[in-house]
Image (cartoon, rainbow, N blue to C red; front, side, top):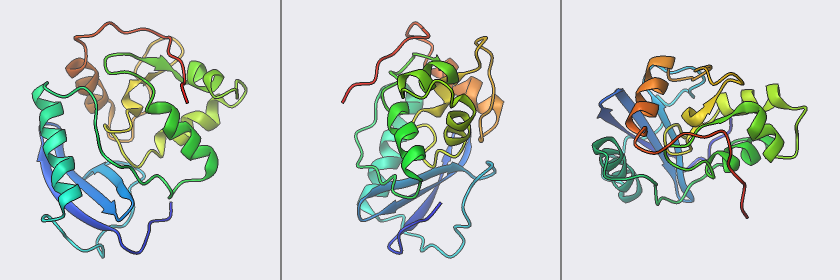
Length: 174
């Protein structure tokens, strides 16, 4: 992934572990668990806990974990991915709170039914975990598979959202 030169970060604790959030002038560009797979080398990014966008993201995450927020209202900067990755990440944004889908259903919704593995790889490289809800994607048999932040965290996020009924169906809307 490529990140804009104006990127800045902050660290925050969550009920599921320490998080790193990153933003650019265009929007929130990253949210990773401190120990997750596929994270960038952020050591040289300036720490900006006072950044208004990062503060807003922290507040919305706290509301999400408290169970009082079911969607995020933040500008996002997903430019760091390939066009295909960006299309997958945009599709993830259409999976409603409390609803699960499969990699195959997501692949079909993107009109790429033969690209299930590529979709899975793009989901795994999602730079904005939780906010771009890759945790809502399950294996074909409904099993918990693949989550860069760890399957225990994926299960915890799905449990948090379990107040709504889970289904395998969703539609992409423009």
